[in-house]
Image 1 (cartoon, rainbow, N blue to C red):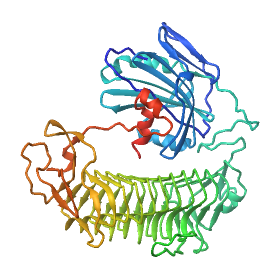
Image 2 (cartoon, rainbow, N blue to C red):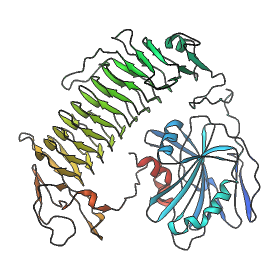
Image 3 (cartoon, rainbow, N blue to C red):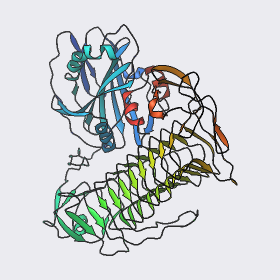
Length: 580
């Protein structure tokens, strides 16, 4: 889209849509100097400036991938370009529209109406010299995305051209191929033609009776009050309180059974106080769990693509528990005074976001659970803030773990290849514990005022760098009979700015008791800091926050390698991968 004599650009690769947001075709009049591009196969039109080059979808490398638990399939794409800049249009399919919507919203995208269609408009700066604007439109099981990218200097200059192109975008989407009638959306995005709203106690006195008489896709709204029952859910439903958790309490009638037991995909539970499921029996030792342990306030049993949000799950065995349940979102819940706040067993690709956990045993607990995102949670006054056992490839970032009796976070029992990034571990017995766990990355964390900042036993090849270790009784500690071998600085050179000057070097950690010198003023100590059985060869003179580190482009996206090699980093990848 956009003329530029300077350089390089980023195209948009893509995502989308199991949900059903109906979008009507719209007629548009092109501005002077524009012409139409029409795609017969995917039934859309877009206006673009005359004289631009159009590259049809056959020239785009297609692929399939999974990022942040969202399965992505690009089925058609086209670019309009006045080299080296471009408009990129893509038609895509994705497994979880609600998760995508949440991600887009979290990045600050505005909901917009253009030609009568609902869309999301976002501007990003994926790398320092480039700005990108993207608009997402949802149609049936497809997502249409238009984006443009150019240099920061030219971005504002060509905003009007992009606005004109966006307002010329027309969708003429074909009817679904299946004989099933086109879905009708509900407020929760799960739609079927006969979806209805059921009120408790207006239509049914009990929540369970409402569930029994509901149909897949229905919404059950529960008015204020106290409901004493245990609820089994085997249909794809939205169940939410009318006025939030303070006003709507569901208490277990049978304390030995889950309050809500979910055994269906696409279930949403929102806005309840859930309590009284008090049975528990957490395992001891390292034997494999063969069946659910604690009784839970909300229990997902082989249930996928669910959303559990804005609930107060207190005074239960587990507040929220997932058993062989994947691709779900656990968002903004208060899980307090349980045995464990949020527990995952054999559950993968879930998002655990913005929850508050203060419990007798663990705030957040993962057991044989992989590729989950544990983000922006507060885990205070537990025995373990966050505990992983036999759990790999999880992203644990931007959490705050304060005043836990034992560990802020513990990676235990062959929990490998996890990323522990940008967390705060304060006033715990051990801030970070790594026990018989290997190849983890520990970076940009603040470990302060703990008995031990980091404790390591029987663990190898963990990379630990750009962390602050401040005012701990021992900044680092390792047991003698398990000599660990780990890496205490970055494994690649990093470009950073310190005291106004830019350098490139390996970077270690900040140790408050380091007393070495910095003769050349590059912010790195001239002598190594001995730590456990290893050394930090590049200790920081100041806290890592005083170093401006250049952002590194993320390239590892299975199935799209060739595309990104040609097109560069996309805003969609930036949007999703920064949460990994």
